[in-house]
Picture 1 (cartoon, helix red, strand yellow):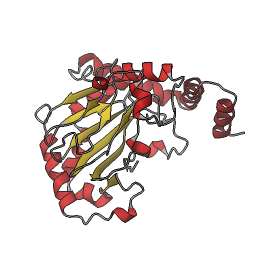
Picture 2 (spheres, rainbow, N blue to C red):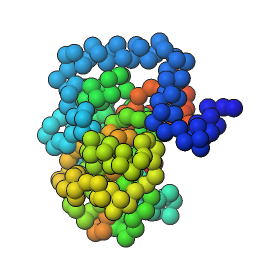
Picture 3 (tube, helix red, strand yellow):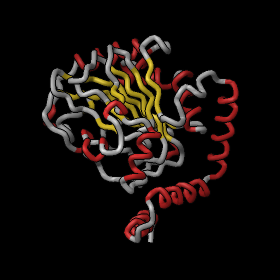
Picture 4 (tube, rainbow, N blue to C red):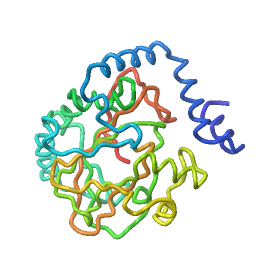
Length: 281
């Protein structure tokens, strides 16, 4: 029986998801302990001296910041705007009509500042401090959300399941208000409480607003609203979140993703390449 089948069997028997997947992570670490220990050691050295090591609140799992916080943010925003304006967005090709990745591989070569910002010291050090290991930059995208009336799939509260912990960075490219489908989330400490009360741990089902608000206050929800360059680091594996409930205008957002190694996905590509993938989810 392979690993995926073992996990499915354990979950059917009622073993809590967080227990199952922590066991999977431990098993995968033991296959390459040298890489795991090396990354942890490098991270400790960086965290001992970096002023960004505690930039992301470890208890709440996020940090909102503005365009003037780090160099390069507005350069990336301007590049993203140029990329979008040069394209004819065809939503018929989208997996989700409310959330479409317009970024393509050639865009990264033509606009190196877009990918470059994700490799700058403030961004990587913040992710390293939160994850306590040298992370992989495992995804980048430029996501367009048009006006829509739906509340389905990732427009409902959920957590991401690539790992028990990760860091995503969202950067608004256009001015985003409450009606433009802002990325919205519940801080990790409150999300943990909600999931415990619902009997969920990790990889739980999507939740309605009513289910979530039964166990927290409306003001607990945080939305990334603001001008171009408004940013957030957020652990989308711990923080319940949704996006793209765009009821007017549109939203355009840069997103890049930092993950630990090994990942807990069952569609893991060869991690030795360290290749950054454009992701659409």
